[in-house]
Length: 109
Image (tube, rainbow, N blue to C red; front, side, top):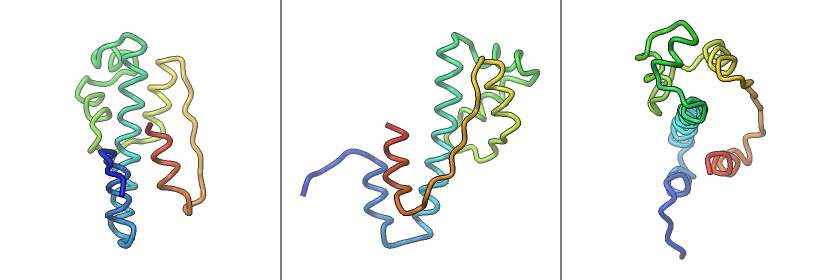
């Protein structure tokens, strides 16, 4: 058996027989991915959290929350405001569940 340090792979193996745990891992992974996307887009634009907050007419702590992997309150309207301020667009995809864990791993890598 090959050992791994990949947290998503380890969680996938641990949760494969527990649908509730699978769902919790999936939600947490999506939240972490959205937070990382916001952070990466902001830093690539050379902006601080305060700079981005000013661009979208909000407060810096709001941006900090959005970039927190544990935050569960991402809204489409806020993501669109951020995307527009960073000269980007939001893309959303609905994918089949049967390959969801494999696709999530590929998306995050």
